[in-house]
Length: 123
Length: 430
Image 1 (tube, chains in turn purple, blue):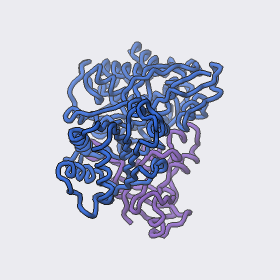
Image 2 (cartoon, rainbow over the protein chains, first blue to last red):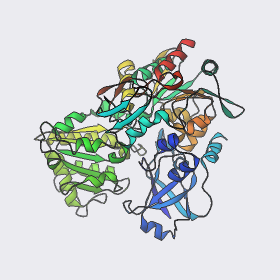
Image 3 (tube, rainbow over the protein chains, first blue to last red):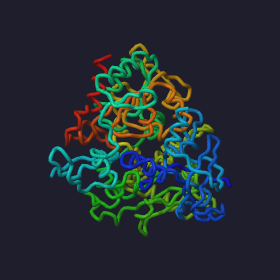
Image 4 (cartoon, rainbow over the protein chains, first blue to last red):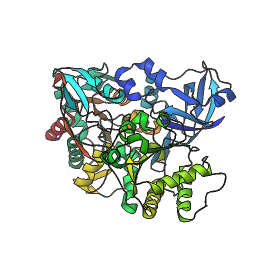
């Protein structure tokens, strides 16, 4: 299913708080997340225990899912984080953080941990 | 008990009461969640208290002498250093950073260049009408939040501006109209009343909205009957009526409006044009803008750079002179046009696209900050600094470009220097 991704700052999923007070587990729990409309959740045949795999022209990432009826259908939002960064990219001289076309599919594959992502960056 | 200014976000609330014995902060009264967390950072478990150097792939604690020696070694062997961040430090530290960049022929930029600095880049062509928080409190009758979720990013902004009673707005909330324009029904929509206007726009359709408002300004009845961008005709007419009829209107411009200029269009330029056109047609007052940068001194970097070098960011030095450049922090990293980086008070690995993070890690990276982060995990040298606004004072610029002085409340642990002191030490050792 194709959707539009917006990365946003959220007070409940705040990366500064996670880095200052959290640990690797809380980082992953609070930041590796994609939030979508309950209707899209239904159409994708998702369950809370399933993860979602998002692919954009810049990369792909697996995160857990959550629902929020305040988000319009066709839109998925992710808190700004090292996970969301896998899907963001550059066009011209500017970074693209919003309105990124992504493909969504349910998956049981695991979410990469913070240290695994750091290792990918260092490679 | 003492009244202090909070450095939790760019609003720099100056009404926070702190009870402290000079060693610890015992009580914080009046701060929002972000502010409280900022004050709590002094004793946070992930605070960096000692300098560190990466050896055999692992960060290890070291002495200040060794860490600074290694820092100087990296800087001296670098021909094209990159300095980035500086939005969470004082103006004094920003100026030191620029002086350092000048002395080592580096390129310096702040987070503003991928955020609100983009707006200042087009202001030369169009001009801009800015306003201050005090003006909004005292005079505003229309507040538009566009592409911003102030309730979560700058938590007390709506509280101060929408709900306050100002000198000329004694009735407070009752006379102020709030309009939220955003694709998501964010937390900022929850403070809306019956006379307010909630406009849930279709994603990526802000430009269509600006253009139809412009058109309607010039020729009445330009709005198609089905509406535009998911907003129906009557709401669009109400929006325009508010814009043209406000005595003192303000638009909070959020990150959601800062779209890249991919097809030759520039949404910011068109928004500024629209505001100018409305102001020309305004009979009662004017519409102004406030740029919602999140970091507490993001506006400061632009101010310091403008007043010292005549440019609002992206400063490239060669032979100790500022030279013209079209580069930004993004283009510099993307084209691998650097051979080392000094990151001050920010976490690029957490906010830059993955591809850029990878490139940043291929060169020696010096990380100057008070807390651990993703950038800490990839740094070659880590130099801790005091927390500005708590353990160090200094000048900052609020989001409405008003200078605000921060005070020192506590002494930093382990005699950690402030950002300004550390950058001065580095310059002296060069």
